[in-house]
Image (cartoon, rainbow, N blue to C red; front, side, top):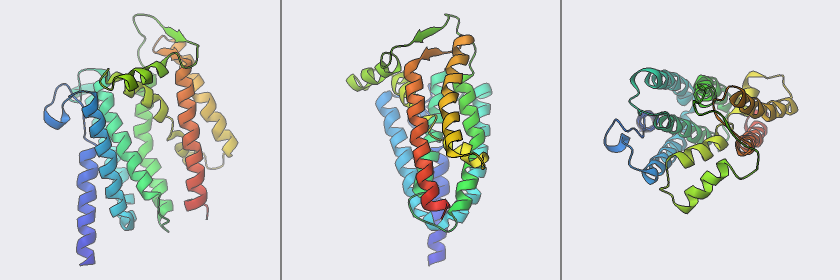
Length: 265
């Protein structure tokens, strides 16, 4: 009976994880995968987080199975994302539509990692290592398409006044949740995109001290904003720096907590 139940839990995880990672907000598809406004997008992403989180909790004793399955699945999903982004573009005709699919995959990964990181497990080290190795190619692709873009034809724009740039998008979103699906994507995207970076840096730079990782996290957003300014390929905004730093150091603190609680000892 226990073996059958474990198998059912594994099947449940495979189905929910894969379906969650193929949640889109396309202007080319229909039904659940179609764009139906900002509220519908947020509901879908919330469902992705909740379902994958629950699926992870249910399978916490099957952590060895997840350690083997999840990185391979993420590599396949990353290949599908790249192929769709540059070739088929079924996830949407515009950049922002395609980024919403990436956001769903990103959230599914975060939900799974958090669900596996709640309880202590003697096999957690292997899960942690394989999770971040599998996630890294996806993360590099996200950084490339979000920051290393082609130059804007309209020239560069720059905001040097804190809370008068990207933060205004949050204000507009709070005032009217349906104002635009671009507003929450840009604001929360700038906040969350650097959360995984300390986990990846600690995974690959094993001999680096925490202060060195923190320094990399501080400098990286500055380099990115500088790149966007020099090559006119993005809106240079001090608010983006604030959000990037906030996301990175939130991830840094979380990584240190998980490391001391579940890995070091």
